[in-house]
Length: 139
Image (tube, rainbow, N blue to C red; front, side, top):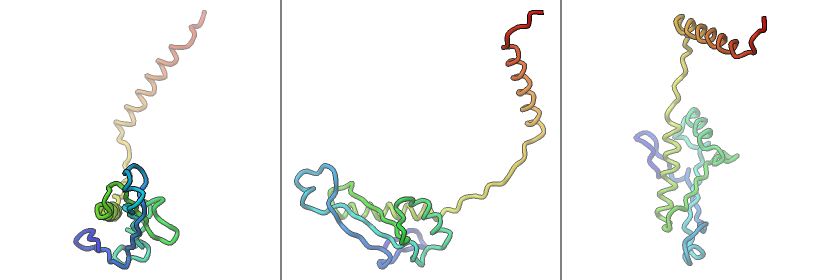
């Protein structure tokens, strides 16, 4: 069971984990012990997440989101299986916390009259500068 915040906790049936050998350095230990963790969260079937949160979570997860609607998080930073398990759970929790925050709606604003005038004045000044760069007339 993973606790996301006061309202949301992920149940054990939503999560499954598998262990594999980690890549990278680790000496003799790396070839013998399966310390890397692959945590699978059934996000699409989760009753604790609203459809809006699931949509945002799908966008945040990106390539970690599978066709079946699951999120796969891997962790192989540490040499201990327990630490990698905690790291994977924390990665998943951070992803879900980020999806819980709804983005603010953008409110359209119009430019003020003064800013329009300033813009036009700078355009005319610039036009004058550029016109003076041309070759002089021989009249």
